[in-house]
Length: 169
Image 1 (cartoon, rainbow, N blue to C red):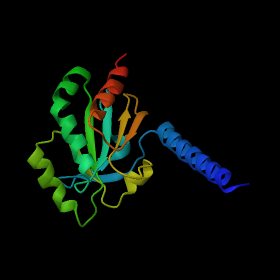
Image 2 (cartoon, rainbow, N blue to C red):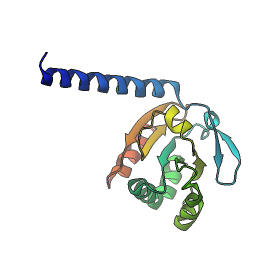
Image 3 (tube, rainbow, N blue to C red):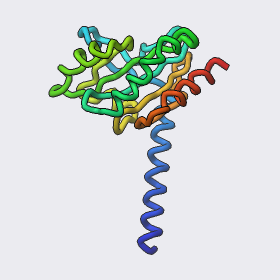
Image 4 (spheres, one colour):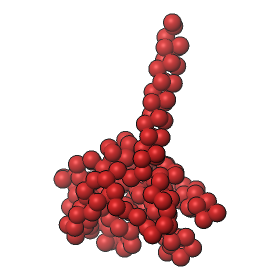
């Protein structure tokens, strides 16, 4: 087998394994783990729900510029999204112990109306199959993950909104 064939085969197998791993996450729904909110209250992630309405789970960090851009862009439309679809957004910070103290001041400065959870050890991040942030999941009213998007480019928030609207159909 020549080098090109080996590289293509390896690449294909890697993509196949990543895709199937993600599909496994999707089939299982939200893993049940304990996280803290910004007030120190313990939250069971497996119990996250939104009364049969869509929910967004967005993994982010204070050191991640695309993460902040995405959540700020969504913030500009979030109230309208809630009014129209009832969607709830849970922003999960993956800041570690060194940068976790920046989360609350940043969120307060932006007046985000999202529920903020802290995942300083990255356990929930790993359980959800998140390799890098930002990573956004859309969960339907039955708790099933129906959409996943990694990274952020301006306009991605409109694609997310279109996916939310599909759940109303």
